[in-house]
Length: 76
Image 1 (cartoon, helix red, strand yellow):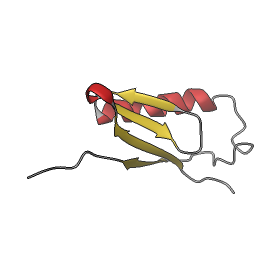
Image 2: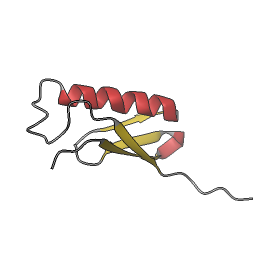
Image 3: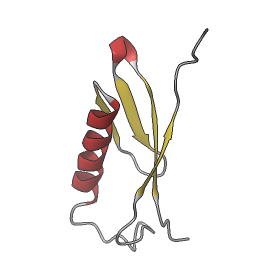
Image 4: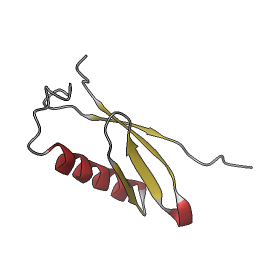
């Protein structure tokens, strides 16, 4: 099966950081803000996949990120 997207979960880490973890690839990154975390996981994925034959990994050439965020509950 060819993955048409690269799935990433973002969740709160320790000390106010956010953690981004790819679902089907061994890639993890973090950032102080959500924007920084997304930038960092994109860069980490790019470095991880650099020089790889994406068809061997069942990933389409221009697979966009599908990001799921896990947020802390809000209390009124």
